[in-house]
Image (cartoon, rainbow, N blue to C red; front, side, top):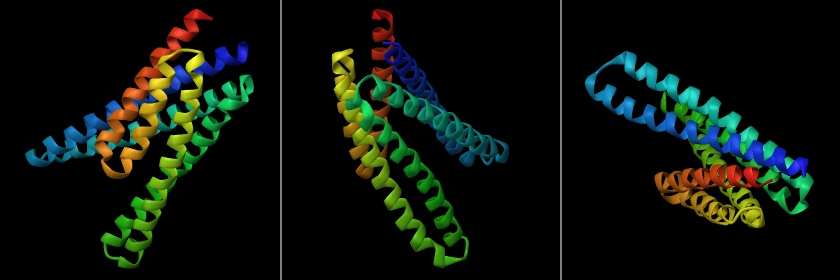
Length: 192
């Protein structure tokens, strides 16, 4: 029972931090658009700083979700797929950053890096998709703890798939899933 409680605490914290990361990313995006059209360089720098902070907070959130899946897997081995899913997603995010760096270097003049950068980005999206489906499956399996986990799991999996085609919609679905996960974790913790 102690492992379940720890897992739910990590799940709650990880969901919360990842939601904050999404919020910072949205704020940075809008700030970048407004400042770019206004020609304010300091706003653009602030936008880049917000993206970096969002990345760090999101990474910490993902690590907490990984820890949650690990603790939950100790309680019930069926939840182990979530741990594997988070590992794959973290690797996918690292590949995504690396792919964007390669593509940016390719666009800045060393064109030989552009193609490999796009390939790495594609592989990163596939890894994030696979990891997202596995993590969503773990949430689905947690419906016996709280029914909201089932909806959260379905939304997480659909969001992971939608990210391949409609990134904004996929990210929104994952954010809603994390909000439901936070709520379900809070409810489950209060019932323990």
